[in-house]
Length: 240
Image (cartoon, rainbow, N blue to C red):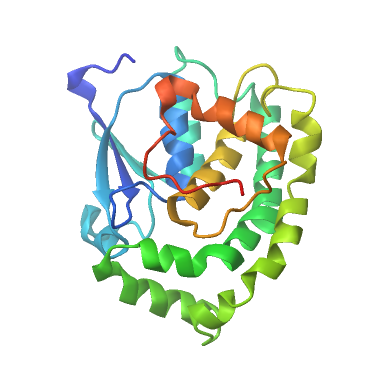
C-alpha cells in the first residue's frame, strides 16, 4: 500500500455495538481500497452519528475523504478510485465492464439484499449500538408500514430455502471460475462478498447450507484476500 501522509485517506463507516464494520456498501469500499493498494484510516460511526459529520451533508455511509476531496456512495467511490489511482490494480476492465457490473448490482438488490433484509433486519437492530436502536427501529418499521421488526421476521426460517436458491447463478459461475471476476477478483466479487460480510456481522441464523461447497470455497478464498481483510473473530457463522 502506497499512500503518502500528505494525502491521507479516511473511510467513514457504519459500526455495530461490538465495533465491527457492518454496512454492505462500506465493505464494497473497503475491498475497493484494498484492491487499489490504498491505505486508509477508519472513522467509525453509528447510525445516529452520520448526520453529525460533514455538516449533515450525507445521509448514509460510506464517505471517503481523500485529502481535500470528499466522495460518498460506494459506486461513486469505486469510480473515483479508478479515475484518480490509475496506477493501481483495476477494479473494472473498462466502461463495458462497469455497465455489466451494474446489472449484477441491480440483481443483487432485487434477489439477494431484499431477502437478506427480510431475514436479518431484527438482528441488525439487536447488534447496533444501544443509542442507535431507537432510530433504527423507528425508521425501518416506518418502511414496513407499521409492522414491528419482530412481526416482520417471525418465522423467518421458512424464507431460507428461497434465499439460498437465489444464489444459484453465482454457484453456476463459481463452479467454473475461482472468482466472479475469473481468475482474480474484481468489483463484482466485492459486491457479493460485502453482502455476506453484512450477514456475518449480525446473523443469528446461518444463511447458507452446510453442503454449499461452491460458495464455501469462494467465500474462503475471498476472506483470505489482502492479508485476511475480511476475517474477524466477531464474525457469525455463514454456513450451518
